[in-house]
Amino acid sequence: MQIQPRLFEEDAKGIFGKLEARCRHCVERAETIWNNACSAEPRLRKAARPRGRNSLFNEIVADVAREEFAGDAEVDICECYGTLRLHLGEEYDLGFKKVDHRGRHSNYPTKRQRDYDKQMQLFGDPLPDAIRLHIGIEWNRAGTEVIDVSLVYPYRGTKLWGYSLRPDDGQGVAAIQLPKPQTPPAPAKFRSKKVKEDKLGKKPAQ
Image 1: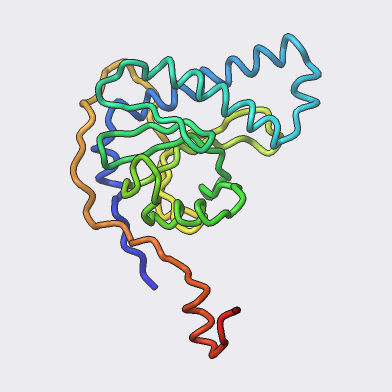
Image 2: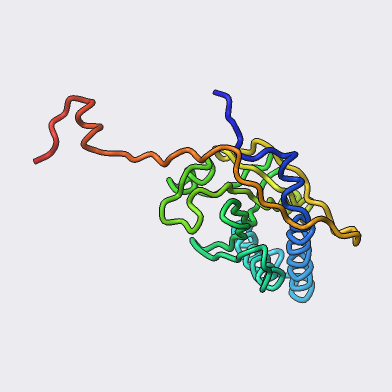
């Protein structure tokens, strides 16, 4: 089955403009803070297992991002479900996330996470119909260095496309532009125990 993206890579590069360098800068600042902490206490790097390191590092990134985007008229900071997200208008939802070299994350596949990765509607979410993107953070195999920061368009736990975010070159870039999504999101699916029992020819429990 061919998947039709709601956002294409070439369009994304023109949409997010200066946001790319600022998101990369958040991760780079967080890595500096992490490395300084590990230098002050060498056992910290040795003791931190991947899950613990990622959790702590994400909190540092979130703290830096709060400072970076505080008062920004183009970006709303949203904190829900235990994560920090960047909202651009009503159309785009971006979140910092550890990914591997293929752009895949390792979140436990809850129903909400699966719907999130399928670009489906998320009922109860601040932006239920938004196009969702990862600001992917890729570590080296030893977990000692961030080797890439990328923008990833996820689908079913993997990516349809992604590209490395540009560092700030000091020249400045165009302001963020927000066109409407090209296609509507897929509607969320409801599961009914009664419907399932009817299809199987079972009588509902009394």
